Figure 1 (cartoon, rainbow, N blue to C red):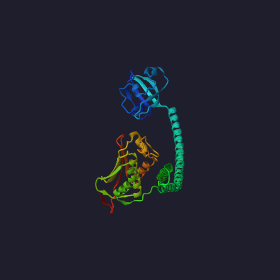
Figure 2: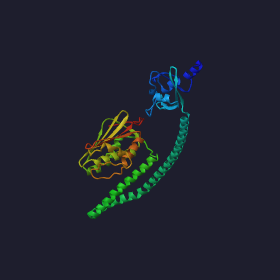
Figure 3: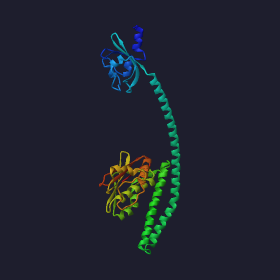
Figure 4: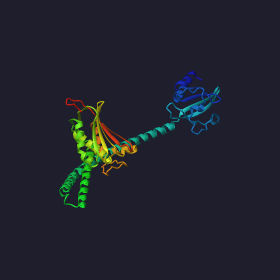
Length: 373
């Protein structure tokens, strides 16, 4: 064989050349074959470099049949590559010469073009749908906020008047009528709370939760909130204890929003604690963060249900000790408020061992910051 031709076939040709002995062992291979398989094939059985899906390839059959065969070779990339292979007897063995299957390459090229076009069309369609969904979501939030705002005033009037009638006419009404007024008051109060939560949700989802930050004493805010929940706790003979672990710095925060979070956590703890139970509020400062924890001795929450608590209208199988209702939005809103402050909220709970809801806020040092004990 001409030396230049041999050099070309060995080092440069875009074909596979395997030199086999009579037993089918590879005794030589060109650069293309070595690069394709990613290994040194010399000494291996020719079948070891094939991906024989049918399991029926034999060298004797290939030699007996002069027609070229479509064979799949292993590749360094892991995906089989199909070649058209001709087997030719030689003086010193057998030559297996493989060429790429041009028909397969063309089919693959067409398939790739078709898939790329389909992907581009799907991407454009998805973008259109996302734009439409965003518009619908904005419309929903606008409608929700408008409806909630319009409902808040009449519900507040119903709640105020029922409260007035209960106080002014309690001595003049019979037990049945007084019970009617109590139901009207509690129901309107629950509805107003739901409306307030819906307004908060619409504000949060529309990205309009603006914080009115100022430097505040977190201990003072907590004490204020404990006072707000004292009446509810007293009805169930529940004590709310505050434990200030160390010097607590002042924080830059939205006081009304943090009070809203605390009210949700403490009122929930009271609701789920049994008659004569206890609620503990702990505040500490460590590692540049102030952490507040509210624990109760209620029934606890199964681990598999805990994620529901921070989802819209999420409820668990656990019932409040006094049968109090919940909107299923309070904890979601509370977590959003804490996240907006750059903080985190967490829950630790086990059935029969109560629950501990905690949140931590970063300390922002400024010239007004001080310490509270």
